[in-house]
Amino acid sequence: MARKYFGTDGIRGATNAGAMTAAMAMKVGMAAGAYFQRGDHKHRVLIGKDTRLSGYMLESALVAGFTSVGMDVIMVGPLPTPAVAMLTQSMRADIGVMISASHNPFADNGIKLFGPDGYKLSDEAEMTIEQLIDSDVPLSPSAQIGRARRIEDAQGRYIHFAKATFPDNLRLDGLRVVIDCANGAAYKVAPSALWELGADVVSIGVNPNGTNINRDVGSTAPQTLSETVVAAGADIGIALDGDADRLIIVDEKGQVVDGDQLMATIAASWARAGRLAGGGLVATVMSNLGLERHLSAQGLGLVRTAVGDRYVLEKMRGSGYNVGGEQSGHIILSDYGTTGDGLVAALQVLAELKRAGAPASEVLHRFEPLPQLLKNVRFAGGKPLEHESVRSVIAAAEADLAGTGRLVIRPSGTEPVIRVMAEGDDARQVETWVDRICDAVRQAAA
Image (tube, rainbow, N blue to C red; front, top):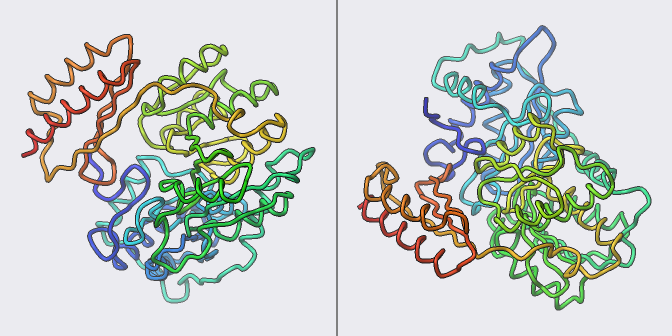
Protein backbone atom coordinates (compact mmCIF):
# COMPACT_ATOMS: atom_id res chain seq x y z
CA MET A 1 0.00 0.00 0.00
CA ALA A 2 1.38 3.42 -0.98
CA ARG A 3 2.01 5.83 1.84
CA LYS A 4 -0.06 9.00 1.88
CA TYR A 5 1.95 11.37 4.08
CA PHE A 6 5.34 9.87 4.94
CA GLY A 7 8.18 9.99 2.43
CA THR A 8 11.70 8.60 2.69
CA ASP A 9 12.45 10.81 5.70
CA GLY A 10 9.27 11.67 7.57
CA ILE A 11 6.58 14.06 6.40
CA ARG A 12 7.89 16.99 4.37
CA GLY A 13 6.57 19.74 2.15
CA ALA A 14 5.95 23.44 1.61
CA THR A 15 4.75 25.14 4.78
CA ASN A 16 1.05 26.06 4.93
CA ALA A 17 0.34 23.79 1.98
CA GLY A 18 -0.57 20.12 1.62
CA ALA A 19 0.54 18.06 4.59
CA MET A 20 2.66 20.74 6.24
CA THR A 21 0.03 22.87 7.95
CA ALA A 22 -0.58 23.55 11.63
CA ALA A 23 -3.80 21.54 11.43
CA MET A 24 -1.95 18.52 10.02
CA ALA A 25 0.85 18.86 12.60
CA MET A 26 -1.74 18.72 15.36
CA LYS A 27 -3.22 15.56 13.81
CA VAL A 28 0.24 14.02 13.59
CA GLY A 29 0.75 14.74 17.27
CA MET A 30 -2.56 13.17 18.17
CA ALA A 31 -1.96 10.11 15.98
CA ALA A 32 1.65 9.52 17.03
CA GLY A 33 0.71 10.12 20.66
CA ALA A 34 -2.07 7.56 20.46
CA TYR A 35 0.21 5.04 18.74
CA PHE A 36 2.95 5.29 21.37
CA GLN A 37 0.74 5.18 24.46
CA ARG A 38 1.60 1.75 25.76
CA GLY A 39 1.35 0.86 29.42
CA ASP A 40 0.07 2.74 32.44
CA HIS A 41 2.99 5.15 32.92
CA LYS A 42 2.75 8.85 32.14
CA HIS A 43 3.90 9.14 28.54
CA ARG A 44 6.18 11.86 27.25
CA VAL A 45 7.40 13.17 23.90
CA LEU A 46 10.53 15.18 23.18
CA ILE A 47 10.35 17.81 20.42
CA GLY A 48 13.29 19.55 18.74
CA LYS A 49 13.48 21.74 15.67
CA ASP A 50 15.83 23.58 13.33
CA THR A 51 15.80 27.34 12.76
CA ARG A 52 13.02 27.74 10.18
CA LEU A 53 10.43 30.42 10.79
CA SER A 54 7.67 27.84 10.53
CA GLY A 55 9.18 25.84 13.38
CA TYR A 56 7.32 27.97 15.92
CA MET A 57 3.97 27.24 14.30
CA LEU A 58 4.52 23.51 13.87
CA GLU A 59 5.98 23.12 17.36
CA SER A 60 2.92 24.73 18.92
CA ALA A 61 0.58 22.59 16.84
CA LEU A 62 2.41 19.39 17.74
CA VAL A 63 2.32 20.32 21.42
CA ALA A 64 -1.44 20.81 21.15
CA GLY A 65 -1.86 17.43 19.48
CA PHE A 66 0.28 15.47 21.91
CA THR A 67 -1.11 17.06 25.06
CA SER A 68 -4.68 16.58 23.85
CA VAL A 69 -4.17 12.81 23.92
CA GLY A 70 -2.53 12.89 27.34
CA MET A 71 1.19 13.02 26.57
CA ASP A 72 3.59 15.32 28.40
CA VAL A 73 5.85 17.34 26.08
CA ILE A 74 9.50 18.30 26.50
CA MET A 75 10.68 21.05 24.13
CA VAL A 76 14.42 21.40 23.52
CA GLY A 77 14.45 24.14 20.89
CA PRO A 78 16.92 24.25 17.96
CA LEU A 79 19.06 21.10 18.05
CA PRO A 80 20.46 18.69 15.44
CA THR A 81 18.35 15.71 14.47
CA PRO A 82 20.84 13.26 16.05
CA ALA A 83 20.61 15.20 19.31
CA VAL A 84 16.86 14.70 19.35
CA ALA A 85 17.34 10.97 18.74
CA MET A 86 19.92 10.76 21.53
CA LEU A 87 17.88 12.76 24.04
CA THR A 88 14.72 10.79 23.28
CA GLN A 89 16.50 7.69 24.45
CA SER A 90 18.42 9.20 27.36
CA MET A 91 15.38 11.00 28.78
CA ARG A 92 13.25 7.83 28.51
CA ALA A 93 10.74 9.54 26.23
CA ASP A 94 8.18 7.40 24.43
CA ILE A 95 8.65 9.27 21.17
CA GLY A 96 10.95 11.92 19.69
CA VAL A 97 10.02 14.52 17.08
CA MET A 98 12.33 16.63 14.92
CA ILE A 99 10.78 19.54 13.04
CA SER A 100 12.99 20.05 10.01
CA ALA A 101 13.16 19.79 6.24
CA SER A 102 16.89 19.06 6.43
CA HIS A 103 18.70 20.61 3.43
CA ASN A 104 15.54 22.02 1.79
CA PRO A 105 14.92 25.81 1.50
CA PHE A 106 13.38 27.62 4.47
CA ALA A 107 9.86 27.64 3.02
CA ASP A 108 9.71 23.84 3.41
CA ASN A 109 9.48 22.01 6.67
CA GLY A 110 9.05 18.46 7.89
CA ILE A 111 8.28 16.19 10.81
CA LYS A 112 10.56 13.25 11.64
CA LEU A 113 9.56 10.72 14.28
CA PHE A 114 11.78 8.56 16.50
CA GLY A 115 10.78 5.66 18.70
CA PRO A 116 11.77 5.35 22.37
CA ASP A 117 15.00 3.59 21.29
CA GLY A 118 16.08 6.65 19.30
CA TYR A 119 15.63 4.97 15.92
CA LYS A 120 13.46 6.26 13.09
CA LEU A 121 10.16 4.48 12.75
CA SER A 122 9.62 1.44 10.59
CA ASP A 123 7.48 1.59 7.46
CA GLU A 124 4.83 -0.40 9.31
CA ALA A 125 4.70 2.06 12.21
CA GLU A 126 4.41 5.00 9.82
CA MET A 127 1.59 3.28 7.95
CA THR A 128 -0.31 2.76 11.20
CA ILE A 129 0.18 6.40 12.20
CA GLU A 130 -1.08 7.48 8.77
CA GLN A 131 -4.26 5.52 9.36
CA LEU A 132 -4.67 7.19 12.76
CA ILE A 133 -4.16 10.63 11.19
CA ASP A 134 -7.19 10.01 8.99
CA SER A 135 -9.30 8.64 11.84
CA ASP A 136 -10.93 10.09 14.94
CA VAL A 137 -8.33 9.76 17.69
CA PRO A 138 -9.98 9.77 21.15
CA LEU A 139 -9.13 12.80 23.29
CA SER A 140 -8.02 12.44 26.90
CA PRO A 141 -10.35 13.31 29.76
CA SER A 142 -9.87 16.87 31.02
CA ALA A 143 -7.93 15.80 34.11
CA GLN A 144 -5.49 13.70 32.04
CA ILE A 145 -4.44 16.27 29.43
CA GLY A 146 -0.65 16.47 29.11
CA ARG A 147 1.68 19.23 30.24
CA ALA A 148 4.47 20.96 28.31
CA ARG A 149 7.82 22.27 29.51
CA ARG A 150 11.01 23.54 27.91
CA ILE A 151 14.44 22.38 29.11
CA GLU A 152 17.34 24.80 28.88
CA ASP A 153 20.39 22.52 29.06
CA ALA A 154 19.70 20.32 26.03
CA GLN A 155 22.48 21.92 23.98
CA GLY A 156 25.03 21.24 26.71
CA ARG A 157 23.93 17.63 26.97
CA TYR A 158 24.49 17.10 23.24
CA ILE A 159 27.87 18.87 23.25
CA HIS A 160 29.00 16.56 26.06
CA PHE A 161 27.75 13.53 24.13
CA ALA A 162 29.49 14.55 20.90
CA LYS A 163 32.81 15.27 22.62
CA ALA A 164 32.70 11.86 24.30
CA THR A 165 32.92 10.21 20.85
CA PHE A 166 36.31 11.84 20.22
CA PRO A 167 39.35 9.79 21.32
CA ASP A 168 40.46 10.60 24.87
CA ASN A 169 44.13 10.74 23.90
CA LEU A 170 43.67 13.38 21.19
CA ARG A 171 43.02 17.12 21.11
CA LEU A 172 42.39 19.50 18.25
CA ASP A 173 45.09 21.95 19.32
CA GLY A 174 46.94 23.34 16.32
CA LEU A 175 44.08 22.77 13.87
CA ARG A 176 42.27 25.71 12.36
CA VAL A 177 38.78 24.47 11.51
CA VAL A 178 36.10 26.33 9.58
CA ILE A 179 32.64 25.14 10.57
CA ASP A 180 29.62 25.98 8.39
CA CYS A 181 26.37 25.35 10.25
CA ALA A 182 24.05 26.29 7.36
CA ASN A 183 22.29 28.80 9.63
CA GLY A 184 20.60 25.70 10.96
CA ALA A 185 20.13 23.53 14.00
CA ALA A 186 23.82 23.15 14.95
CA TYR A 187 24.67 26.86 14.88
CA LYS A 188 25.53 26.85 18.60
CA VAL A 189 26.52 23.30 19.45
CA ALA A 190 28.98 22.51 16.65
CA PRO A 191 31.34 25.51 17.08
CA SER A 192 31.23 25.04 20.86
CA ALA A 193 32.15 21.36 20.71
CA LEU A 194 35.08 22.01 18.37
CA TRP A 195 36.36 24.90 20.50
CA GLU A 196 36.12 22.85 23.68
CA LEU A 197 38.26 20.15 22.04
CA GLY A 198 40.98 22.71 21.34
CA ALA A 199 40.42 23.75 17.74
CA ASP A 200 40.94 27.26 16.42
CA VAL A 201 37.38 27.71 15.17
CA VAL A 202 36.20 29.96 12.35
CA SER A 203 32.38 29.87 12.19
CA ILE A 204 30.11 30.69 9.26
CA GLY A 205 26.40 30.03 8.78
CA VAL A 206 25.77 30.71 12.47
CA ASN A 207 23.36 33.66 12.22
CA PRO A 208 19.92 32.18 11.57
CA ASN A 209 17.05 34.59 11.04
CA GLY A 210 14.29 32.11 10.25
CA THR A 211 14.58 32.41 6.47
CA ASN A 212 18.28 31.92 5.67
CA ILE A 213 18.73 28.25 6.57
CA ASN A 214 20.75 26.48 3.84
CA ARG A 215 20.87 29.67 1.77
CA ASP A 216 24.30 29.81 0.06
CA VAL A 217 25.82 27.90 3.00
CA GLY A 218 25.86 24.37 4.33
CA SER A 219 26.61 20.97 2.84
CA THR A 220 24.54 21.58 -0.29
CA ALA A 221 26.33 24.89 -1.04
CA PRO A 222 30.00 24.35 -0.11
CA GLN A 223 31.43 27.19 -2.20
CA THR A 224 31.32 29.67 0.70
CA LEU A 225 33.08 27.15 2.92
CA SER A 226 35.76 26.49 0.29
CA GLU A 227 36.47 30.21 -0.10
CA THR A 228 36.58 30.73 3.67
CA VAL A 229 38.98 27.82 4.25
CA VAL A 230 41.44 29.17 1.72
CA ALA A 231 41.12 32.79 2.87
CA ALA A 232 41.54 31.85 6.54
CA GLY A 233 44.45 29.50 5.91
CA ALA A 234 42.49 26.76 7.64
CA ASP A 235 43.45 23.10 7.80
CA ILE A 236 39.97 21.81 7.06
CA GLY A 237 36.36 22.92 6.60
CA ILE A 238 33.20 21.19 7.82
CA ALA A 239 29.78 21.90 6.32
CA LEU A 240 26.63 20.60 7.99
CA ASP A 241 23.12 20.72 6.58
CA GLY A 242 20.10 22.40 8.14
CA ASP A 243 19.43 19.71 10.73
CA ALA A 244 23.10 18.62 11.01
CA ASP A 245 22.58 14.94 10.28
CA ARG A 246 25.01 15.06 7.37
CA LEU A 247 28.23 16.77 6.41
CA ILE A 248 30.61 17.59 3.60
CA ILE A 249 34.31 18.29 4.16
CA VAL A 250 36.59 20.76 2.38
CA ASP A 251 40.35 20.22 2.46
CA GLU A 252 42.95 22.95 3.01
CA LYS A 253 43.02 23.65 -0.74
CA GLY A 254 39.28 24.29 -0.85
CA GLN A 255 38.49 20.98 -2.58
CA VAL A 256 35.25 19.24 -1.60
CA VAL A 257 35.41 15.77 -0.04
CA ASP A 258 32.09 13.91 -0.31
CA GLY A 259 30.50 11.23 1.84
CA ASP A 260 32.05 8.36 -0.11
CA GLN A 261 35.58 9.57 0.64
CA LEU A 262 34.68 10.21 4.28
CA MET A 263 33.22 6.74 4.73
CA ALA A 264 36.36 5.26 3.16
CA THR A 265 38.50 7.28 5.58
CA ILE A 266 36.56 6.23 8.68
CA ALA A 267 36.33 2.59 7.57
CA ALA A 268 40.09 2.41 7.01
CA SER A 269 40.76 4.00 10.40
CA TRP A 270 38.40 1.66 12.22
CA ALA A 271 39.66 -1.40 10.34
CA ARG A 272 43.23 -0.53 11.32
CA ALA A 273 42.11 -0.26 14.95
CA GLY A 274 40.28 -3.60 14.76
CA ARG A 275 36.89 -2.06 15.45
CA LEU A 276 35.23 -2.16 12.01
CA ALA A 277 32.28 -4.55 12.25
CA GLY A 278 30.92 -6.56 9.34
CA GLY A 279 34.10 -6.53 7.30
CA GLY A 280 33.16 -3.39 5.39
CA LEU A 281 30.47 -0.73 5.24
CA VAL A 282 26.94 -0.11 4.02
CA ALA A 283 26.14 2.53 1.40
CA THR A 284 23.35 3.23 -1.07
CA VAL A 285 23.09 2.58 -4.77
CA MET A 286 24.25 6.18 -5.34
CA SER A 287 27.75 5.67 -3.91
CA ASN A 288 30.50 5.77 -6.51
CA LEU A 289 31.79 2.56 -8.01
CA GLY A 290 35.27 3.85 -7.17
CA LEU A 291 34.44 3.42 -3.47
CA GLU A 292 33.50 -0.20 -4.03
CA ARG A 293 36.72 -0.93 -5.93
CA HIS A 294 38.80 0.90 -3.30
CA LEU A 295 37.32 -1.09 -0.44
CA SER A 296 37.71 -4.36 -2.33
CA ALA A 297 41.42 -3.67 -2.80
CA GLN A 298 41.71 -3.45 0.99
CA GLY A 299 39.80 -6.66 1.56
CA LEU A 300 36.70 -4.78 2.69
CA GLY A 301 33.17 -5.17 1.37
CA LEU A 302 30.45 -2.75 0.33
CA VAL A 303 26.78 -3.60 0.76
CA ARG A 304 24.35 -1.36 -1.12
CA THR A 305 20.80 -0.39 -0.19
CA ALA A 306 18.03 1.79 -1.58
CA VAL A 307 18.52 5.54 -1.22
CA GLY A 308 17.73 6.80 2.27
CA ASP A 309 19.68 6.66 5.50
CA ARG A 310 16.88 4.65 7.12
CA TYR A 311 17.56 1.78 4.71
CA VAL A 312 21.28 2.01 5.35
CA LEU A 313 20.62 1.76 9.06
CA GLU A 314 18.26 -1.19 8.66
CA LYS A 315 20.95 -3.13 6.79
CA MET A 316 23.59 -2.14 9.36
CA ARG A 317 21.44 -3.35 12.23
CA GLY A 318 20.39 -6.53 10.46
CA SER A 319 23.84 -7.55 9.25
CA GLY A 320 26.16 -6.32 11.99
CA TYR A 321 27.87 -3.31 10.38
CA ASN A 322 28.86 -0.23 12.38
CA VAL A 323 29.79 2.18 9.54
CA GLY A 324 27.42 3.22 6.79
CA GLY A 325 26.03 6.20 4.97
CA GLU A 326 25.39 8.07 1.77
CA GLN A 327 27.48 9.93 -0.76
CA SER A 328 25.55 13.08 0.20
CA GLY A 329 27.16 13.00 3.65
CA HIS A 330 24.72 11.09 5.84
CA ILE A 331 27.17 8.98 7.84
CA ILE A 332 25.90 6.59 10.49
CA LEU A 333 28.31 5.33 13.13
CA SER A 334 26.19 2.93 15.13
CA ASP A 335 28.77 2.67 17.93
CA TYR A 336 27.71 6.20 18.81
CA GLY A 337 24.20 6.87 17.59
CA THR A 338 20.97 5.72 16.00
CA THR A 339 20.96 8.05 13.01
CA GLY A 340 23.30 10.12 10.86
CA ASP A 341 25.30 12.69 12.85
CA GLY A 342 27.33 15.28 10.96
CA LEU A 343 29.26 16.52 13.97
CA VAL A 344 30.15 13.07 15.32
CA ALA A 345 31.26 11.91 11.87
CA ALA A 346 33.34 15.07 11.48
CA LEU A 347 35.06 14.36 14.80
CA GLN A 348 36.09 10.92 13.53
CA VAL A 349 37.54 12.54 10.42
CA LEU A 350 39.39 15.11 12.53
CA ALA A 351 40.77 12.33 14.73
CA GLU A 352 42.21 10.59 11.67
CA LEU A 353 43.69 13.90 10.49
CA LYS A 354 45.43 14.36 13.83
CA ARG A 355 46.75 10.78 13.84
CA ALA A 356 48.10 11.09 10.31
CA GLY A 357 49.81 14.42 10.91
CA ALA A 358 49.37 15.21 7.22
CA PRO A 359 47.25 17.70 5.24
CA ALA A 360 43.60 16.94 4.67
CA SER A 361 44.21 16.82 0.91
CA GLU A 362 46.48 13.81 1.44
CA VAL A 363 44.49 12.06 4.17
CA LEU A 364 40.93 12.33 2.90
CA HIS A 365 41.13 11.76 -0.87
CA ARG A 366 41.20 7.97 -0.71
CA PHE A 367 40.32 7.00 -4.27
CA GLU A 368 39.69 8.45 -7.71
CA PRO A 369 35.93 8.49 -8.34
CA LEU A 370 34.63 7.14 -11.60
CA PRO A 371 32.90 9.67 -13.84
CA GLN A 372 29.39 9.95 -12.45
CA LEU A 373 26.52 12.09 -13.71
CA LEU A 374 23.17 12.69 -12.05
CA LYS A 375 20.33 14.62 -13.67
CA ASN A 376 16.78 15.23 -12.48
CA VAL A 377 13.69 15.25 -14.68
CA ARG A 378 10.64 16.93 -13.19
CA PHE A 379 7.25 15.63 -14.32
CA ALA A 380 3.66 16.70 -13.75
CA GLY A 381 2.06 13.33 -13.15
CA GLY A 382 1.74 9.72 -14.23
CA LYS A 383 4.42 7.02 -14.13
CA PRO A 384 6.92 7.78 -16.90
CA LEU A 385 9.29 4.99 -15.81
CA GLU A 386 6.65 2.44 -16.78
CA HIS A 387 6.44 3.72 -20.36
CA GLU A 388 7.74 1.20 -22.89
CA SER A 389 10.00 3.71 -24.66
CA VAL A 390 11.72 4.56 -21.35
CA ARG A 391 12.17 0.92 -20.46
CA SER A 392 13.72 0.24 -23.85
CA VAL A 393 16.34 3.00 -23.50
CA ILE A 394 17.17 1.90 -19.95
CA ALA A 395 17.68 -1.70 -21.08
CA ALA A 396 20.02 -0.56 -23.86
CA ALA A 397 22.01 1.57 -21.41
CA GLU A 398 22.36 -1.28 -18.93
CA ALA A 399 23.63 -3.59 -21.64
CA ASP A 400 26.18 -1.04 -22.87
CA LEU A 401 27.47 -0.24 -19.37
CA ALA A 402 27.66 -3.87 -18.24
CA GLY A 403 31.06 -4.59 -16.71
CA THR A 404 32.32 -1.00 -16.89
CA GLY A 405 29.71 1.04 -15.07
CA ARG A 406 26.31 1.30 -13.40
CA LEU A 407 22.93 2.85 -13.97
CA VAL A 408 20.59 3.98 -11.16
CA ILE A 409 17.18 5.44 -11.98
CA ARG A 410 14.66 6.21 -9.26
CA PRO A 411 11.78 8.52 -8.43
CA SER A 412 12.42 11.02 -5.65
CA GLY A 413 10.77 10.22 -2.35
CA THR A 414 9.94 13.88 -1.63
CA GLU A 415 9.05 15.54 -4.96
CA PRO A 416 7.77 14.69 -8.50
CA VAL A 417 11.24 14.13 -9.94
CA ILE A 418 12.93 11.20 -11.66
CA ARG A 419 16.63 10.96 -10.78
CA VAL A 420 18.84 9.51 -13.52
CA MET A 421 22.39 8.55 -12.55
CA ALA A 422 25.06 6.70 -14.49
CA GLU A 423 28.73 6.11 -13.85
CA GLY A 424 31.50 4.28 -15.64
CA ASP A 425 35.06 4.35 -16.86
CA ASP A 426 34.09 6.39 -19.97
CA ALA A 427 32.71 9.85 -19.12
CA ARG A 428 31.36 10.42 -22.62
CA GLN A 429 29.49 7.12 -22.56
CA VAL A 430 27.98 8.03 -19.18
CA GLU A 431 26.81 11.45 -20.36
CA THR A 432 25.32 10.04 -23.55
CA TRP A 433 23.14 7.52 -21.75
CA VAL A 434 22.01 9.92 -19.02
CA ASP A 435 20.90 12.43 -21.66
CA ARG A 436 19.11 9.77 -23.73
CA ILE A 437 17.24 8.44 -20.71
CA CYS A 438 16.27 11.95 -19.54
CA ASP A 439 14.94 12.75 -23.00
CA ALA A 440 12.90 9.54 -23.02
CA VAL A 441 11.42 10.34 -19.59
CA ARG A 442 10.49 13.88 -20.67
CA GLN A 443 8.73 12.58 -23.79
CA ALA A 444 6.89 9.92 -21.83
CA ALA A 445 5.75 12.47 -19.26
CA ALA A 446 4.64 15.04 -21.80
